[in-house]
Amino acid sequence: MKENRFNAGVKSAVQTADNYIAENLSAVHSTHRHTFHAMPPIGWMNDPNGFHYAFGKYHLFYQFYPYGAKWGAMHWGHYTTQDFIHWRLEPTALAPDGEFDRDGCYSGTAIIKDGKLYLMYTSVLADKQTQSLAVSSDGIRFEKLGEVIGSNQLPKGALRTEFRDPKVFSRNGTYYSLMGSRTMNDEGQILLYRSPDLMNWEFVSAVRRDKLTTRGIYECPDFFTLDGTDVMFASPQGYETKEWRYENMHSSIYATGKMDVEKGSFESVYEDEIDGGFDFYAPQTLQSPDGRTIMIAWMQMWSRRMPTELHGWAGSMILPRELSIKEGKLYQNPVRELEDYRWNEVKYEHIPLKEKTVLAGVAGKKIDLCVSFDLGTAKKVGVKLFASGSKFAKVYFDRERDLVVFDRSDMGIEIFHDAKEKDAAIRPVKVNTQSGRLDMRILLDVISCEVFLNGGERAMTGNVYSGGSDIAFFAEGGTAEIIKLEKYDIIN
Ligand code: FRU
Image 1: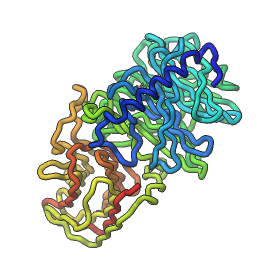
Image 2 (image 1 turned 45 degrees about the vertical axis):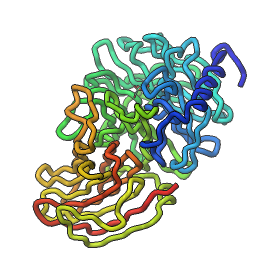
Image 3 (image 1 turned 180 degrees about the horizontal axis):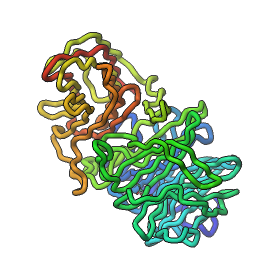
Image 4 (image 1 turned 30 degrees about the vertical axis):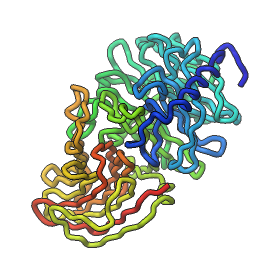
């Protein structure tokens, strides 16, 4: 790597991090480590960054603090993968040591230009957040190019302290970037900038501005076009609960509609929460070479107790999901690559359910479980997971509330939550059950549980620490049956 005035010292800060990782890896406890989800080798992980296909592989960068299982001065860690199942640890990509990013290399995205991989990220210096670039010609070693959008390019009324998370994309030969921002009047907004070359940027407009981000900004915008529909993502801080939606302290939302980059407007047609579980934040998407839009997200939540902190690591990523749009709504399903690692198939059909139904061969905590329920007349129908004695989590249909509920209140430990959050133990979502049938696909990986309802109509993600591997189905207060079930062990 060529030294220049911005990266003087970069080599050493990145190397210091990588040396620390190599020397301390053995101190990380293996008990709760996932087997096919991305997680930090050691230390802390939050948002996915720069999720992109380049140089013949997928790249996942992430907010990383190697020196403790707590948020700290942000680095960009780096994994590459071919299948979203095996994650190859690469050298740390960015460390906070420039004269403009000394206090952190915050979230951002990646783009290919002229055969090089560019990372656009938020550079933090004291209370100032600006946007910077780094470039690589091999996708592994990055050279910082310095600040490209400074505080002097903020629109009137925008705070320089809350200006971050560039999502860079190109349209018709022009580069655009969306950024989260806050105004002096406590409004959250998403700003659009444009550039002919990634280096020189001009402000276009605020594509969204409102007071719904009651505790900050719209973090981590994302944008893509899928089946002719423009989709914008954002992670609003302190978004208010609406009925059963947005019960976490911070939420991740999508809006479908039309982006007009010339005018600088996004006309929103439909909006909803992306994932109705506990642990899902800051999603990003990439386009795969075979034309899929694939999403990844942090599988944790701010202001929560993270039990793995005591094991030397904290935070992980969801298994990436393939996105599609049906009738204007977002559908999500696990990447199809997972199917190459499904073994030991167990199948059942037409099993009437009792208050406790255990099926031979249906157990485990690294599994892919697909089950279709006939909801019959029962008041509650569902499944207990990660069960061990009196500890478990359950996912079930609640007829009275007409909701599907993910309940981890019996997992044996309490996840403390922010005082403004109702709890961190029970989350509901609504799905269509008019036909009397409910399909669940559940992926378990040691401590993570990702639930996909009705072919991806809704998803719910949460970590569960009860530690058991028993599985039991149940129907309470009436009849119900399993129409069919398939269970696979995931072996990778
Ligand atoms: C979202 C976020 C981003 C920021 C990063 C810092 O989780 O707060 O807005 O860039 O994390 O680690």
